[in-house]
Image (tube, rainbow, N blue to C red):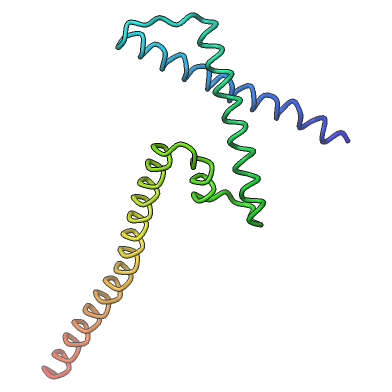
Length: 142
């Protein structure tokens, strides 16, 4: 029972820090809009946007967790994120494109890793062959 009580303040502080980070980011975005569009935002409006954004993120996190759990997984995948974004076509398209870009980069990295050990073993075989040739030359000279 004591452990749970000790964890609650820490969890509360993480939540508060996240909330503060969202509020800060919303404030920065509102300032940017103010500069570009000459539209002002009151502190109350920024606070309201921050609160709605934070609550929506909490809902997204719960939904993603449920999607993974339904699929009998403990890890959220990009397929879960796509499922979450299914009602927003432009967001779904963006997520799908980014997912494909990342997959291509991962394939390139894997291909480089496979080539690298081959290159290293090839160069070590070549150096060993050169050493053997050098040793044979020394023996033939003696």
